[in-house]
Image 1 (spheres, rainbow, N blue to C red):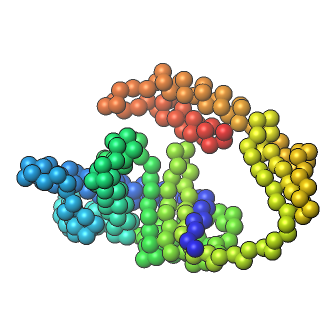
Image 2: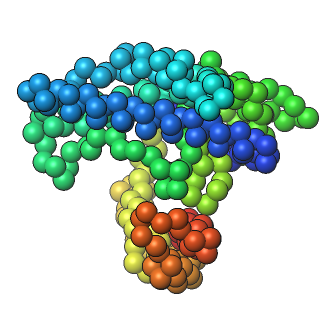
Image 3: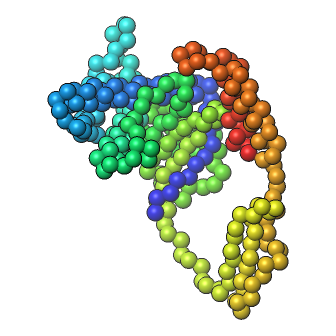
Length: 281
């Protein structure tokens, strides 16, 4: 059984800068895939074909090879080749998977409001960093008494091991949330746990109104206990966070600029604080 284990990362300033550079390359690859897909779709529509099914995963991977060999800066340096090929290949696979799902929904006649949409361009301002690596692109190594994560390109990052991994990871997703924190999500094979012996007792749990969870138990003789001895009281810690979130959202609404204009620093600051308040609630 494959499961995900997520841990907090503590990257240094140099590591954060290199991670954002890797993400910029992957975002460039994604946008070029979207652009090429749209170009081929327009070409096929002019030729009378209803669906563009020729830009699959294999074709997209070959197009990535062309991009890595031909994309140059003003000095003639092929800067895209400096990035991790594993992360860029995973970006292409994610694009192909999303595109295939959108075309399949259209082919099956799913309503526009319920079907998946075609992949869109990712902007630097509105998208958060997400990098995927297989076993060829990352490793775990011991350093200074702790186990660190090393990504392709020699990026070493300390990991906050809140719990041990049950096995060797087969892939990892390094991502950044809206408030700037970095996380690593490992995919591992976890053996199935042996079920505990039956006791004849049972418990029913239901979200409550005055309590967070309302519980009712049944013992081995079939007697139901609804006294509330096992109810989970409501902590009500989210009330203040909701009020703070509403206040920050009102500020953001006043400071929001048109889409084509760069957002102000105050808007970005309140956006980050709103994300933190939303996570706390």
